[in-house]
Every structure is written in structure tokens, then in C-alpha cells.
Image (tube, rainbow, N blue to C red):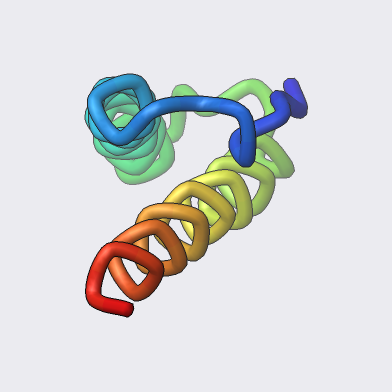
Length: 65
């Protein structure tokens, strides 16, 4: 599920990051117990988390300037 993270505020991004990391934890646990139905979802989540962190870092850098 792609979102436009560049239009979100810092709080919204932090909330989204928290939700994505919780989902990633759950899927990692399911993978270890052989219950994971869609292993591709883990890769997609990892990329979404990276996108959110990139936008957060960019916002931090802009505040410093």
C-alpha cells in the first residue's frame, strides 16, 4: 500500500512507522512458525519502512537548515 509520505507530518510519519514495524514483527514471527501466507509482504514492508525513514530524515535535515 503506497502512500504519499512526503505530504505527511512528522507525527503521522512516526505513527505510520510504528504500525509498519509492528506488522513486520508479526510477519517475522509468522515466518518463523511456518504460518506466513505471503512472504513477499515482508520485503514490501521493509521497503515501506525505508521510505518512511527517508522522509523523516529529510524533514529533520530541513529543520536544521
